[in-house]
Length: 411
Ligand SMILES: [Zn+2]
View 1 (tube, rainbow, N blue to C red):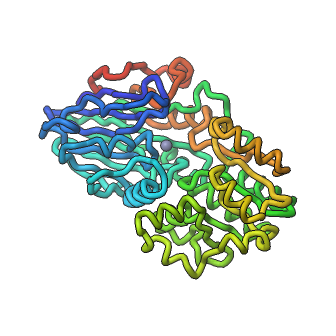
View 2 (view 1 turned 90 degrees about the vertical axis):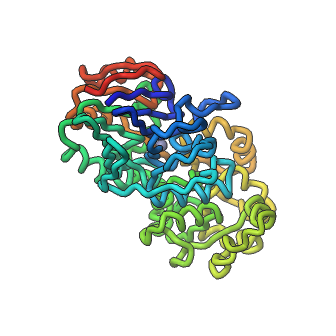
């Protein structure tokens, strides 16, 4: 078995790994780069956009665009594999946002620790803690060799037990391990060490605010939505979800999540989402929410007892609804996004809306990475999804550095 990283040896985003055995190949992730560089082409892998039957499948570790975003560019009928909830989450996001779609693809399902066989390859997914729901590490076996790919991981989210379990009981006898290193050399975003500490800090802000509490977080960060809901319950406020966020929660099909219809959970339809539904005549999306909706004219009165999932594009809606008196804003996203939205945030500050940054990273801390690398019994470790390769090399003397497109023999 041999493999190569097409993208990710020198950057965060655009993950793509090709693995070959006996002339057959599989691909692990096919992500969009996060750097804005205009037109991005599909990695040069036979069977994606040119006919080549030796490509047996593309496996997606989790539903973040930097891991699946080039799927829609595939023109050949290669089978795609991903978690069942991942597929639904990608479909919902593609409707409401500009995130990539699945094109015409009909993915097959990956499930936790259920091995699938593709030609000479056996692939076993291991569900893992990450800011994306339905995330997996992937174990690939062929030729009596074992390659382990981390996808994206962390050990301080609401699924930290999955990280702990994997450290306690990792797959045995790994030869090569391709491990993410996002946080190496980055300014740490760790004022709040865990999801639970995020919920504690949010509850404090909710208790101290007289008016509406706005929380700007990713609709796809389901762990974070649970933290917001937890803090709502502790401060006896209702949770108002925008319809896109409500649809992501529906896509996860997890009864533990704050679904509209549960006590204290309502749905607001922002103007832009309403226009999209009208334009596409997608009333099958909005109709089921009718009994649980809150409308603009009710927001001002509800403000002091509510928390709203928010993004800067909703500011005009809320100004029109006159519900921002004595409001507060929690930004619960990576600090890079905060800088990109400076203009709207300055405008909100001018309206007297106090902002607090309450966030924990979706990626493993340097300490968690060290634990993970120490625990996985691999003979060699190759970093991916990072900028600081030299920093990663300090984690272990088993680390070896490769460049994009460079094949190596798994041994
Ligand atoms: Zn990710």
